[in-house]
Image (spheres, rainbow over the protein chains, first blue to last red):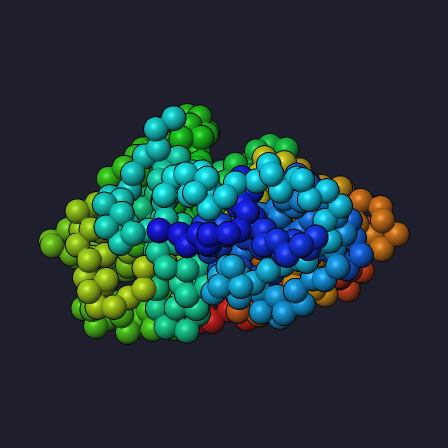
Amino acid sequence: MSKIIEGLKYSESHEWVKVEGNIAYIGVTDFAQKEMGDITYVDMPEEGDDVIAGEEFGALESVKASSELISPVSGTVVLVNGELEDAPEKVNEDAYGAWIIKVEMSLPSELDALMDAAGYKAHIGE
Amino acid sequence: MEELKTCLYDAHVALGAKMSPFAGYMMPIQYSSITIEHNAVRQHVGMFDVSHMGEIFVKGPQAEAFINYIFTNDIRGYEPGKVLYGMMCYPDGGTVDDLLVYREFLADHFLLVVNAANIDKDFAWIQEQAKAFDVKLDNASPRIGQIAVQGPEAEKTVMEVLGYKEAANLSFYTFCDVEYNGERLILSRTGYTGEDGFELYTTNENTVEIWDKLLKAGVQPCGLGCRDTLRFEAGLPLYGDELSPEISPVMAGLGMFCKYEKDFIGKEALLDQKAGNLARKLVGIEIEDKAIPRAGYPVLTPEGEEVGIVTTGYHSISLDKSICFALVNKDFAALDTPLCIGIRKKVFPGKVVKKRFYQTNYKK
C-alpha cells in the first residue's frame, strides 16, 4: 500500500500539491517513487521559470529510467528544493516531505481539476 | 505475443522479482534494487538467470571451416576448452549477432551461444549458410538452462557451494565439462559484467536445482537491470543497442574480434570500413553533471550541431559519473573531443572518453 495524505491535491501523473494561500508546493507521490525505484537525479527548473499546468517542468531519474514531472498548476517557480541536488534519495525516503518546487500560482482555480486523497486512492487502485 | 518463460520463471516470481518482457521472455528486471544487485556483483558475488540465451551445437567434418566462414574471429589453432568472442556479419558488414564459440573436447564439435532475441534469426541464417558445408546443426536452446555466477567471490562459490574444484584451474574464456545429477554441465569462465565469473550450462531441471542451492547459500539473485549497468560500465556492447544490422563490429570499435587473414562473410565490407570508409563510430562520452544521457538522446557539438545519438547511458553506479555510449560522426570520435548531450530541454557539455569506463577484473 502506498502512503496517501489527506488535505493534499493529486494529479493523474502522480504529483501532489500542498496549498498555502497562493503558494503551491509540488512533489511526487509515494506511489510514484515506489514505481521509479532508487531515484538518482532530480532535474528541476530554475527559480523564476514559469510552469504551465499539464506541461513538463522537470524529471526524475532512476538507474533505469527517467520520468517526466508534470506541473499540476500554472505559475512561477519561486524556490526549488536544492537539497535534492545532492540527496535525490530523499524522494524515496519521504515523498511527501521532499517537495521539488514551490510555485506562486497564477490561476489557483486549476486546483479544482485535481483529485483529493480519496480520488487519488481510487486512481491508483489501492 | 505471449512471452516465453525460462525454467527459473517460478523461482523469480517466488522471490518477488519485478518481471518484464525482454527478448521474447518474461525476465526478472530486479529483485531488490538495481544498485544493491550491481554492488553485490562488483564486491562479492551475484547470480543471473540467463537461460533465455541461445545454444546452437555445430558438428561435422567441416564444422571448423564453416564456423570460421560465418564468424569474424578466427577459431583455427584454438584448443578444445577455449571460448572465443566474435560476431556474425552480413555481406555488407552489418551485424547478425555477437556470440561465443566454444571448441568442445570432441573433435569437430562446437557450441555457439547467441543472444536470446536473435535465436530464430541466427539459426535460420546459420542453416542457410551451412548448405554448402558438411555440418549438422542443433538448436538446443529450449533444452538448456544457464546461470551466470559473477563477482570476485564467484570462484569460491562455484567450488564450495557446487563442489566444482575444477573452477580453480580455469582461466578467463576457457571451460570444462563436469557433471550434475549425472548429466553434463558446461562450466565456463565467462561473463558479461566486467568481473570474474562463471556461466553454467546444463539441463533445465538441473538449472532449477542449482539456482536453489546458490540461493540457500546466500548468493544475491540479480536481474537484467544490473546486468545492463554492469556490462555497460565494462564497455561491453549489447546487441540491439551497440550492434545491429546497421552497426558493424568496426563501427562499434570491435575490430580486434575481426581477423582478416581468413575469408568470412562481411570481410570485404569490414576491411573497407577499417580503411576509414565509415560514417559513424561508437564512442564513450562523459558529461559534467548528474543528469543521465539515455538511449536516443542527441549528441551535439559545442556549437549545437547534431552529430550523433546515445545508444546506452547511465549514471554509473560504480564510478558515480554520467556516461554513455554514443554513435557519432567519425570526425568527432577522437578521445577528448568536446561533445554535448541534449537531455530534455537542456544541453550538458562533456567529452569523448574510453568506452571501457570500469577497470575489469578478469582472471588471466
